[in-house]
Image (cartoon, rainbow, N blue to C red; front, top):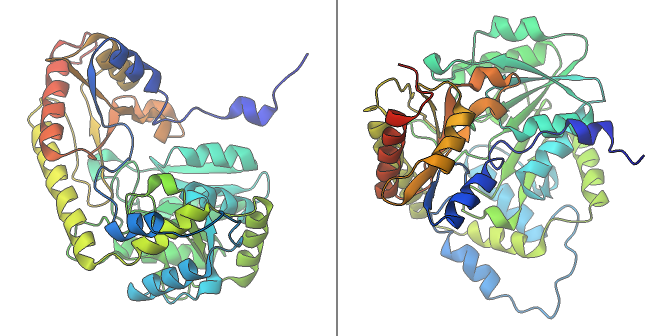
Length: 399
């Protein structure tokens, strides 16, 4: 009998896309859906990015270098230097989105059976990638009551074993929107240095920080220059998700040589995507400022409405464009499905992401949902009104 591999059998469905069939069915019935389930920005990409693709004069689309286009690598090097990260072009490899960057780095740092510490809730696809590489994720839970801040570092040290090879940290966070403090990251860096651990720093939401202080990168941690591997992406920063362009960045020469060998095995990152991102690097500061202001406005409008709903807990996210809300429901997955199958208001309903898929133990996210504030403010306010109305009549509401 034909059978799938054991790895294939273990792979979970995407937490953010698993309810898409329910949304499609709702639309087929004539409903309109506010889609807050996925981090697809609706803010326009920089004009310079679109123009770069529109104005190409090529007779064919050839393979780019496995490293990435020279102009893009030079531009990214200048970008990093502009935020205090002294990186040369040869210390960057272009990847097929940030997701491939994470997967490559997992494979380059850990052997099957090795352990990697991760703070939960975490980006759901980390688990999928870890399973593919035979890596054991070791979760450390952060609490909604604490705004998902990093725990006391003594909790991290307790989790370190002889099999621990790396710590994976996403900052700002997806799904939580939490922005880790400089002090906490310095403490984490000291532990990584003490135990000789890799630090996989997923910083794809760097430009979405809502504090007066600039983003503090793990690449800024003194004495950790050889430990940190930076994972980056063009998707969110410039609303270029479909270009599928990401980056692995590190000062560690052997690591970057290994990353390049992985990159050569899949030939190259998308040619037109690289051209678009090289164009995006020419965007003026006003583009970043306007985008940041827009997301702060959306976040505040959505949270204001959420906090009017009895029984809802929703800490203020200081980064990315996600918020986690704890709802007075028996089961967030059941509730999200119910909203798509059984509830609407004036022809509209809301699609959210249950948080179970962002935890190693799905039970921890049983009453939580992730909301992506990637719609215009007026739409978010209407979506929260529908959420409120749905909660009022949901059969599984907890009083």
